[in-house]
Amino acid sequence: MLMEVVESMRDISEAMHSSPRTAPASEVSQLKSAFLANVSHEIRTPLNVILGYAELINEHLAGKGDESQREAVAAIMRAGNRLSDTIQDILDISRFEAGAFEVEVTQVDLNAAVTRQLDDFRAVARRKGIELQSQIEESAVILVFDEYCLTRALRALIDNAIKFTERGAIAIRLYRDISGAPSLEIRDSGIGIARDHLASLFDPFSQQRTGLDRPFEGLGLGLALCRRYLDLNGAAISVDTREGVGTVFTIRFAPDCESKFANQIGAGLSSEIRRRSFPRR
Image 1 (cartoon, rainbow, N blue to C red):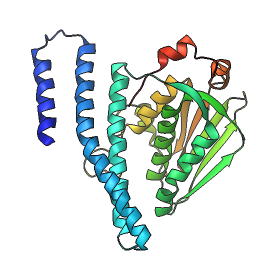
Image 2: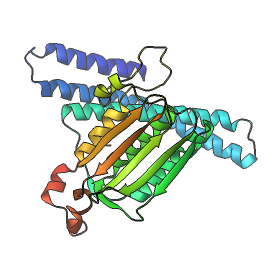
Image 3: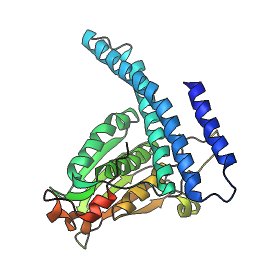
Image 4: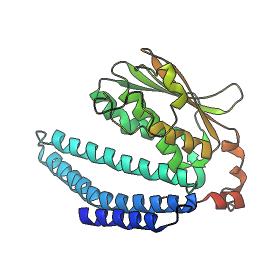
């Protein structure tokens, strides 16, 4: 497998060197995307095998009532899932930079999406002694949105909140703002964000602290992708933060996210939705 990855790197390197220095940026982006896709496949295939067998072992241990080894297996699964997420982040940011990332619009239940993410992260928060709270003020919010983009944006924000919070609680609030637009607030009691870092907060690979001794893991892609996922679907994100107190990220979904194409869903997608449809996987 390693030799295949090296060979992929060599092929792309030779292609880039053989191209004229004046080659269009689009060609370079295509080469980069092809390279990342190849590397992703070579990493993801064995990773899926590892995760699959880890899950089988976990189920086997659960059936035997053996809890002594389950935490070790759970650690393998957590690490594998984080690596899988990292691979996906790298692929997505590459597609955004190449102008090749498009959306697949459908009807999405925002309440259900929030609940799923809270359920997914509850165990992670519990291990840090953090309470996940939810305040749902709207009983039913149906968006016309890309479900993948919404899911990835929510995961990035909740993951960040847990990562940078050592104690206290993280609260998710779903409500309508003064204009009636659906809004989602993710509030933490973490370390906050330095004022001089705010200008680059949503830039790719942006981190408050860099270097091998940085206290928090990650590539610095989560917030950069989060903004892009939301922008592409007509939603906006803002931040309010205070060092040592915590951070609040607010997503405001434009009224169009609820109504613009609602009468066309189920009766045939509009030409605009068709144009934006794109299989990412």
